[in-house]
Length: 376
Ligand code: GLU
Image (cartoon, rainbow, N blue to C red; front, top):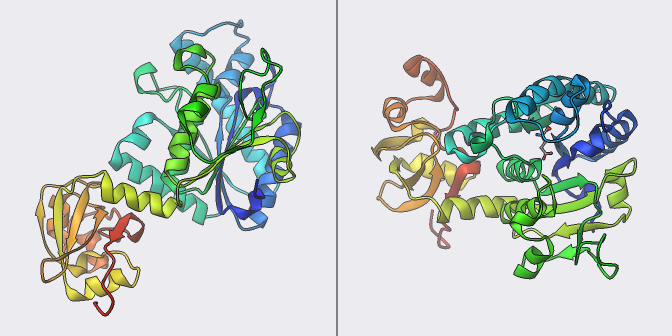
């Protein structure tokens, strides 16, 4: 296991049982130690995001609800009460290190629908540039069964993919993935390194229906699939001790799922492979040069467009000769694009009455074809 400080953008998911005493309050000493670890990672130059469970657990404790399964509306009400306390705890603990906590509540559509995905991603990355630590949870109060993730393992993996994190850490009550259920099988061994998620590995996590508890090993392996495909490594480790992140770097037991490629390569592969272009932007020669130099595509560099596309769709980028030079996710609907292409960025606000992004296609959302030697 590499030290966590070797990663640049880290999402840490913390389970409810670690953060909230059963029937009680936030586990302050644990949270203090975790926040100290996050502050250390940031000192080392890493950007950190937190996915924090515990809203429902804290809310039901504060309401004094009896144990047992809650009805959906009770869970939603409990989350509304618990989330305030949870955010307050994170905010106070992070503030003690001079760090702003930023509460972000997501619903399934925020990571699944591309337009909303672009919004959520822009907000999260802006918060990171502002040196804040996003503290993310599912918006349990409005999420009903059909539209919820239901578990924060997969939510955390979606967040990791969305922000191009290179590491996702799942802190829970287990050390990692075991070859068999450790409670029942004394020969069960901890799998420390998972180079690829094979059917064997999936089998170790148990059948989909066999694990009723949320956030069991099954959802962790599902999360790992999302994370590694997005180019992020994923670590499962126990949060039963103080300083859980420091302990991972010091060699505490854990399971590492190795990433497929890097976040950048995964994102580009996604743009290249999975999305049918919905339209075309025709670029002038200056824009082609700017893109090749690593810059975003501004409206001024586009001469015309074709096709019916919405913000977040894939568009083809053509040079003045009509050759495709790449593809990207477009930042404006085609009706808006029609009005702003050819114009300077500072004219967008006047033309549209609002500005979405300065770029028509941001460089992070773009995949350029390789040019032959001597070309361009
Ligand atoms: N969003 C839920 C909460 O804050 C937790 C979901 C989970 O434990 O995975 O209570």
